[in-house]
Image (cartoon, rainbow, N blue to C red; front, side, top):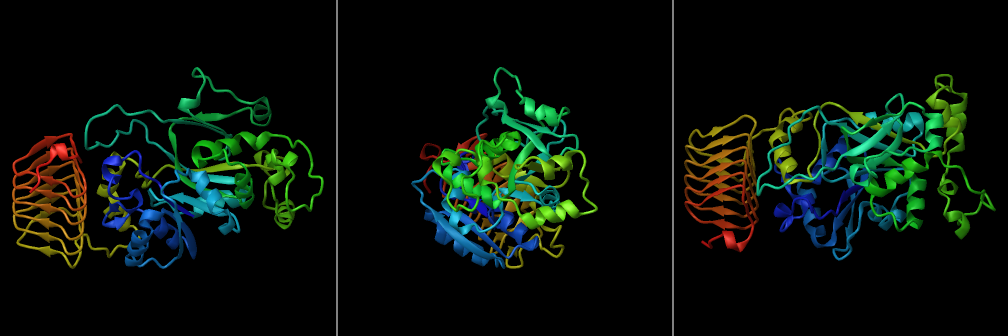
Length: 448
């Protein structure tokens, strides 16, 4: 299941006219990347949630991308502000088995089999993908007005092996900078390693029974913020009471409150695990198979590309790295589309991309940038560390550095933009000079 109905609240300068899931990255819509990842991993079908207002556009774009996997695009009403868990609840009848859930903004070159191995080994209730942030990693530069960055660290506690998740909370929810742990957790796991340098990638494998539980718990709206911490917390809970009828298909109201009544275990799988000679029945594995009914695990990624493009800064940085990512599985990919018109001998870096039907005139310099489809780049234009979306016109002598220029924008002659965001369809007057601006409103523009 691909979650592509988000409104892009952290990058509104780019999503005011274009849905977040359809923003171009390396001249492909953002939502294509997780779908392509699933396709290469061997999946044959996927459910994609999109807002109803752009269902037709998303269907058309994915068809042009020649997606081979069978897609079931489900429209979410625009007027309903649904969280990620609400989205799972919306299509619960379509989910017939354990499900892999991924956000449309996740782009990575990590093989899914690593996550699947953890899920199968421990028969986990939920298995999440986490990314280990390198020490002292500098934040990517962000085009647009400078603003104070909000801290959003997660605190995640692991067992001795570093795979089972025993504790999870965000920094904003900590009470007086204190971390509280249940005695029942410490009894089974006296040594807990709490890390704040890992981020949730919003990719999960979730048991089918969790969807059934979620259907009754309408107060849970978010997967990452509410459902996952709730499951982590409930791992060491004791069952309140048994079902009055173990074969009952519908839970009574008094038993719905107990999450353990929703747990459905595969008897055959449990017997295989019990009789297997290779499974270690000591230590953490003993708890896994002979104790806790709810088990939360994670696979932590340390290397490679693994980024959520949910801010303007990460969107820009991902575009700069995307060609290298695409060539990891398609070595014959051309950085300049064969339908593009390149006149003279412009300086186009080997790490740049130029989209289809784009025209690049003479004496042009393009470095570490992506230029979209059907663009017109006039003579003596300089583009550096920037993202130029589709149908953009850059007139003679423009200088673009560290910017995002949205679809349909027109920049007049000799414009100089540095670290700016230009909104969709905006016209910038000739000889204009801007630094760290979001040029998305009429007050900053002059109509041509």
